[in-house]
Image (spheres, one colour):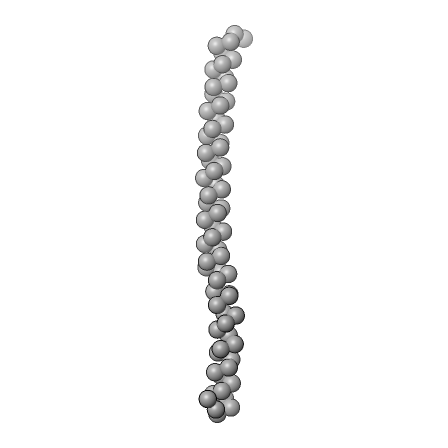
Length: 68
């Protein structure tokens, strides 16, 4: 095999490696966005419920006992 054929194969491999790298970076960004959306949609409401449930139970208790 001569040098030009070897160089062409190396160039083709380099292009394929670059394409794989770009694909992996896009996938990594998608996973990051998915993680952020999961935190915003699931974890933050759970934290809000930590404050809302005691307040609700307190007002419910005040209503059932007849005092405010």
